[in-house]
Image (cartoon, rainbow, N blue to C red):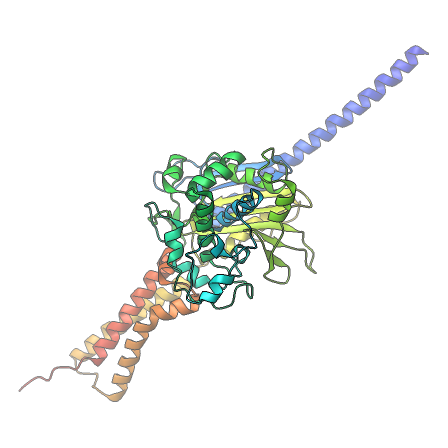
Length: 485
C-alpha cells in the first residue's frame, strides 16, 4: 500500500513538474516571439524614417520586458546604449512638475499661491494679471501665455551659464491673451518661470537642484540639466533632417531651456522615472499622497485629454482605449516618447536622435505600433517619409529661377514693355517677398528662428523663394535704359 501511495505521489509530482516546465517554456517562447516582432517592426520603422539612432525600453510592473538600442550618436558617432543620454524635449516638463510637487511636500512652496509670493519682482504688461497668476496656472499652462511667447524664449542655444531669473525678466512686457485660469495654452514660458521659482526657493541653480534632489535619489545616473554635466555623462547632439535625410546637427544645447525642454537622460534613466510613476520604485521621492497629487490631471485640454503637473492624461473614450499617462518631447535633433498604462502596468520609453517638424506626426505611430505588438495586435502600417512641402517649394524655386532668366533675356531683347501691368506685377512680387517671413510666422504660430531650427530645409527654400521673387520684382520694375542714337 505504501508503495502504491509513493507511486501516486511521484506521478503527481512529475505531472506538475512537466506542466510547470511547459508553461515556463511557453512564456519564454512568447517573450522571444515578441522580441523578434518588435525588433523587426522598429527596424523597419527606423529605415523608413531614416532615423540614425534610438534607444527603447519597455516595462511591465518593475520588470524590463524589452530593451534595445540602434545606431550611433551625432558628432563622433558613438554606439548608442541604454545609458546614452538624449535631449528629451518637453518630457523635461514632467521633471520640473515633479520638482514643484516635491518642494510643496517639503513645505517650501504652495502650488495655489501667486507667483509673486516667491518672485516679488515678477511683472507683466498687465500688472493685475501678474498678481493673480499662480504656480498651478503655470503648471497647467493656463497662465494666459501663448505658445508663440514661449517659443520666443526657446531654443536660444545659450551654452553659457544662465539664470532663470534673467530669462523670466524678459517676459516683463509679454502680453497675455487670456486672464490666468481662463484658457489652456501650451507655452514654454510657463516652465521657464517655474525654473526661476525652483532656483529662488531652493537657493540652488536649477541644474544642481535637479541633480541632487531628483536625479540622484531616483538613480538617474546619466541625467543632467546643463551642458557640461550632460557631455560628461555621454550626451552628443543628434541629427536634423534635410529632405528626409539625416545630417549631423550643428544646433547648440540651450542652458536656458532645461526646465521646459533640454534635460538630457537615457532610456535607463527614464525607466527609473517610470517606476516612480507606477509606484514600483524603491526610492520614495514622494509619499503616497503627493505621488497621487502629481499624477492627478489639472485641466481638460480635449474631450478625453487632460494636462497636469507636467504630465498628460488620456482617458478612455467612446471608441475604447485605456487610461494612460504620457508626454512627448522634441528638440531640433531629437524626439522622445514616455508613456504608462496604469491598468496593465505597461510603461515605455522611446528615444530617437533625428527630428523635423514635418516628420514629428509619424513618430507617435512608432509608440502606437509598439503598444499594439505588446498587446498581441497587428500594428498599423508604418507611415512613409513625406517630403511634399519640400518638393513643392523646390519646384517653386525652380519656376522663379526660370522666370527670372526669362525676364532678364526678354528685357535685353526689348520684348517686355514698361507697362502698368508690369508695374503691378513687380510691385506685388516685392510685397510678397517682404511679407514671406511675417506670413510664415503668422501661419505656423512660431518665430522664424524656430522654423529654421525645426525645419531647416523648408526655411532655406522659403528664403530662396522670397529672394527670387524679390529679384523678379526688381527686374520688372527697373526701367530699361534708352539707347541713344
